Length: 142
Image (cartoon, rainbow, N blue to C red; front, top):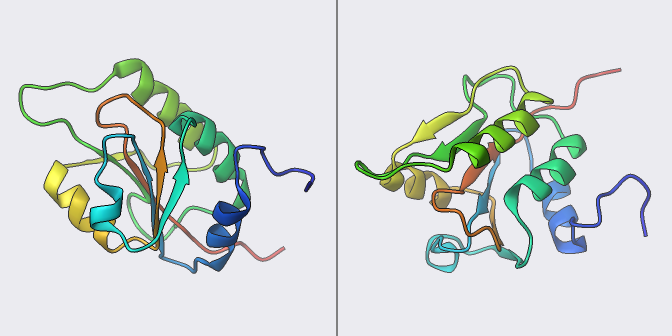
């Protein structure tokens, strides 16, 4: 057991987060997301929600300060809507570590971004459009 690491962070996820470099992206995918179709490296986090994972992951590394939006969520398809409580909850978690607003990306553009991600974390999140991409930054010098 490591101190300061949230219990929702599996050893496999912690290893992947440590292996990532500046500019690498990873996806927190909802339970509906085609993770295994889009990504060669999929980490299973069944039973876990994305807000819980954000609380565990965001203290561990910097988000990319050199891009306008280091965090992106999937935008709803026309005529559909996002769960506003979910968006608020995720936005609050991100705001603790990042000054820029979350970018909302069209569904198929989001899939294209996911294909380039270092890994996809397939969660148990059941809310539609729950998917989030985070881009890793550089740890500041002391």
